[in-house]
Image (cartoon, rainbow, N blue to C red; front, side):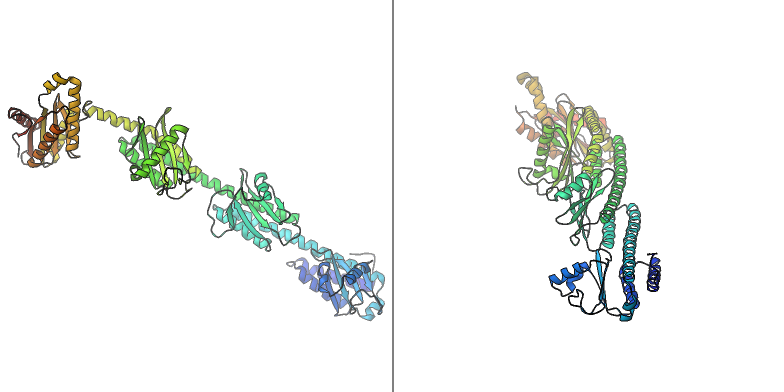
Length: 608
């Protein structure tokens, strides 16, 4: 306060202002209330109820001409105007005899105060008193502005401190965005807000769109690429990057269209809030990635353990099928192996891959993998095939490689377009990489087992394998039929056409046997040109009909045409035989068929 002027009136005014400031120092600061209290003191000091306060931007409220407004501005060559009596050309409204030009409240540069002062008061006031009033009142207003700004900053940074704590305690990106919006609406209620997010996600009820590089403004793109605050001066839109230590996750778009200029303090607050939000989003993403990584590693570990402990090929594919369906929320899974230049759909694949649409997709995938030699995933399958894929739209395809050899591939499908993420794609690659060796080993193991129990020429089961199955059947089944067959005049076929043709005849007859019997029946090469079929849980009548059908089909479908003779024996639980007995009975019946003219079935002794 001014220490040089000490008139009674000035001292009184100084005391009133000190009391006013003291009353607002500890309370929640309100500029409008302070202004009202100050006007009350002015009214008291000048003993008047006629006063009018307006700032420069509110001059339009007065019904003045342009010339009058310019005259008012030019009239204030010093901080006050005072008229002791009516004069022509008085620039103030007629009701007022004193005018003061003061520092403006809040944003405005100047505030004008007009009043009709009491004549007795004005009679004793000097020029120094009026200057003192102007100076001290302006200082009060400057103090109020300073306190208002500082308190606003303190409140903003308190809010920033509080919201930062909430942001970093969350594990949900949607919560982080909601907190940013809530804070901004509380601090800057006149602005509007929008998020441009760079990562995929669903944000219910939030002003969020995906960051479209083709449509975003130049300022928005600069904010995202440079990681800095950018302002579009024309539209008054501010762009603040949601930035973390590892990258930019989106841009906060703030519309300041109601303001002529965006203060630096507001820019700084929004920058700090956006940085806090970006850091929180990064923390959530890292947390989610950590959880997903743990889940992925657990999946790979469980899969490796299960695959290494599984002996059967079907067990391996069925396990992989269930794991992929569960882990990727997939709709269909296919395991395809290359068999030469052809593809083979393996057991454990979804039924879709045995349909025409699935076969087209297999062909498309095989060609692409052979050409590009790398895994791929497609967000939308429409227009990728010769005809639209109507059932599924999103796919991932990963090759099964052993060494440098492409053994096959795995296809995973979903109905919704773009429903597979890049993380899912990498996880599937890892899972298939760890599974390929187990699949190849299981397939090789079964092929080796098949070689041990299978005749290499006819691909029928071996005699030893048939012996084992027959023994198990006698122990657990109620009945059974054994057929022993011999190709008639086979030596003559070899002598006439050669041994290669003889082998081809054996192969033809073996194929007829396979198609003529049930799935649970067993056909085997007994030795030389002799073949055998065992029919578990089969009656004498059913066995006889099967034997006659085989004899008929062999005669009709071999080239060069041959016939077979068949000996039949059967058993029941009431009188179970030994294997040797059953074989001997069938062998005796076979000789009877030969002696009876061949190309027929003879029934031997049956243990019924």
